[in-house]
Image (cartoon, rainbow, N blue to C red; front, side, top):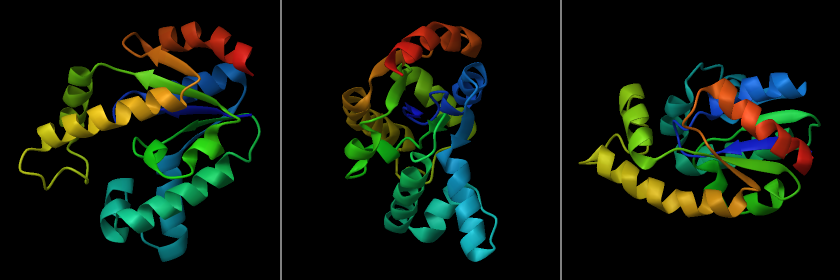
Length: 174
């Protein structure tokens, strides 16, 4: 069984994940990093996941993402951080069902500030109002995250505190 971190962009999956994996003696993988790596293997072109999304288009990007997710979930002792849109894909329910899925919950305004500071993602950068588009997407995705999660963890504290608080709950699930 793997531990799978889900949540909106900027919720802390890539920060919490390695800390959690270290405490558990598990490996950590970030699906976004794996997408970049696979794209490079297939094309010889080194791109960030935003650029991979742009160059492949959403349909091809999501197909690669789903394939990599299936591959990763076959590995034991893994903490896997998913991209914010991954849980929205058809068929993800059945892939995630046997695993300990944790939704890292962060208030909407905090997410918007974190994303704004990091730069608007490819899927909203061409919108007339990227912030409004991101807020709409947040409202659409949160119910799905809540539906898939076995544990919901508020990520508004220091990462080490979040990991310490969630470890006993994860161990109870495993």
